[in-house]
Image (cartoon, rainbow over all chains, first blue to last red; front, side):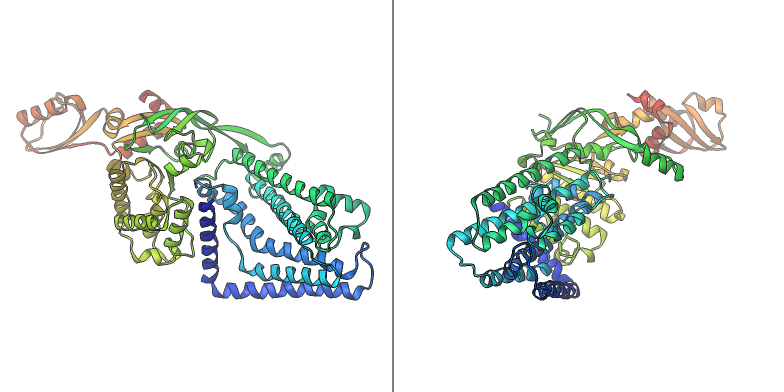
Amino acid sequence: MGRYLKTLRRFWGTALASQTEYQANLLFDLLAMGGNLAGSLFMIGLFFQGGRGLGGWTWPEALVVLGIYTLLDGVSSTLLRPNLSRIVTQVQEGTLDFVLLKPIDSQFWLSTRTFALGGLPEIGAGLLLMAWAARAAGARPSLAVVAAAVVLLGTSLTILYSLWFVLATTSIWFVKTWNATEVLRATLTAGRYPVTAYPQTLRVLFTVVIPVAFLTTVPAEAVLGRPSWPWLLGGAGMAVLFFALSRAFWQLALRFHTSASS
Amino acid sequence: MAIVRADNLSKAFRVADKQPGLGGTLRHFVQRRWRTVDAVREVSFAIEPGERVGFLGPNGAGKTTTLKMLSGLIHPSGGRAEVAGFEPRRRQRRFLEAITLVMGQKQQLLWDLPPLDSLLLNAAVYGLDDGEARRRIAELAEMLELGPELTRPVRKLSLGERMKAELMAALLHRPQVLFLDEPTLGLDINAQVRVREFLEAYNRRHGATLLLTSHYMADITALCPRVLLIHQGRLFHDGSLEELASRLAPCREVRLELRDPVPAETLAAFGEVQQLQGRQVRLLIPRGQLTGQVARLLAELAVEDLEVRDPPIEDLIGQVFREGEVRAGAMT
């Protein structure tokens, strides 16, 4: 375990150093983050001006969902996208070989190798929005509520990560042809709104087929102090299942790995 | 006991077969045709600890594929490999700690950061504590004559300096088995010599086993007492370079400068006359008779100058590969 923690420290230390090497780039990243944040706030503004109900959720409650979505999007920008989108390049260029030669879990390496500073403020904004909206909605945070919220946020992150990792892994087979992770990202924007805001068929799709509901709506229920055991257990089960699937899929993919020629 | 062993190791790749042009593209899209390429065919050899072995063969012979199977990057289609007591394809932690693979065409150093950052990262990955890591870095840096380069961004280093730093990154964990795929590729003569000397010193100091491929024959002749020659996926020679040379060229060339011209019939008694131009003669003499015939030449003819030459090994190998399997088949 010590080896992994130390490695992670070096991973992020070098990532930080690489990013500060290009000062101008970092500035642009921060500007882009500012733009993203302004975009999200504009979305929130639209909610307030709408004056309509949204799938039985009040405005502050819907904002909790948006807060969680912003948090997930921040984590995607900080960790998932910088790491997982590199898998395709590494397969193409054959540098995946260096990862596979290291005495450390290759999935851990590929998933945590770097991080993008630019995504951090979005995580902060998501957390703030979520906390503020929950208060505005009248949620009373007890220990049980906070624990359930943390568990469900963890499950939602695990599910998102696992889905993304599996899609990125397919690049072992479809090296240049398909960058499916962008499709996933586009689909996940559906998580901005409570799942009950969608028509019945989409609702089923987003719960059973693509677990968008587990990503934002279910954790939002917990944050608002109305967690239910079935959802909590369902979410946790789903997370364990998806994570196990991502590991099994990676091992399968490695058996097909032919390693780019010299 | 052998530290690297290959038993009938084989690898077949399925590759798509596509004709050029629009028609070919459409056919390729609708009905894809595949063919199987046997990159490595039933190759067997065993390497003892501490040996330095050169892996020879033209492009596409199967050298890199074999190295990748031995380092666990690709799974063999047939046969078995064993390295440091492990089955490479299982990629167990202790196996990965015992080997390294240096690829001259790829780099693991972080481009924007000084090599030292990559080295410390590798130290963490291999579970070395900071003190030990710094001791090893200092030792390797001294052997490779690297100093201030270690704190300069990799992108600012020359190719030779970068390769040296790559070697440091690949050897920090003191592997017992080194697989080196074209470690001197693109380097100038000086840098090639440095890398070569370093590998020999490393081998001596740590008793590490080396298996290396190179397009520069000088790397092989300087470093490897033993060579494996592979062509079209098959192993054709396993032995010393001298044995290979005598197998490929059973004769040596003797160049003479005589005081007076001598008729060809007289010279034919010593060997096969290749060229006779006035006082200049080129003879081919079988290796086994060389010393006897040279002594006779010196005793019976008025020789002003005499030179015995081996045809250059790369010419010989090149000739074998050009002549294809017929000649190569005769070698086994």
